[in-house]
Image 1 (cartoon, rainbow, N blue to C red):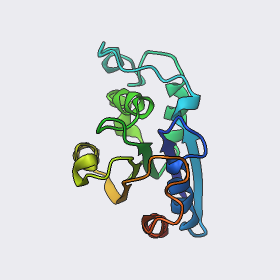
Image 2: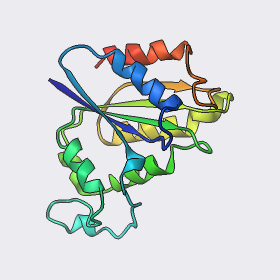
Image 3: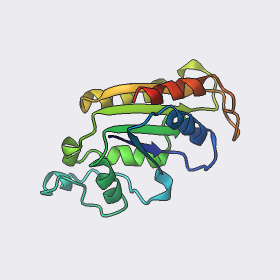
Length: 178
């Protein structure tokens, strides 16, 4: 069984990020166990750069917040998918705090082999996703992860703007590749 963990970086429930995730999940077939977690529902503090994780025998961050819950989830994950609205050319602050906490050496012990990316943005300029896509590619390379794809939907500002968008079917196809 393939285990997929989706990290939903949107603090807004029922929004365009949620709809994009739903399309992705619809595409998955049998033999896939999927869990989507809204990061903003948890207390994940940002990395403070203390490097205490490098001295910790577990290799995990010494800040004891809800990130411990995510370490447990990721220890049983084959495919990690990040989903986020784009805020000023980056992922949401909640998701960024999570990503930065992967600075800890314990990341090397995670069974994750594949990575995916789902993004929505109000902006319609082509370059709106560029900085996130560069970071995504560098993270995949750093962790030696295979990309299952990226779906980036622009021009969706208000809740529900994504309904009927042609890229929803691309998200479904990405789900089928899992």
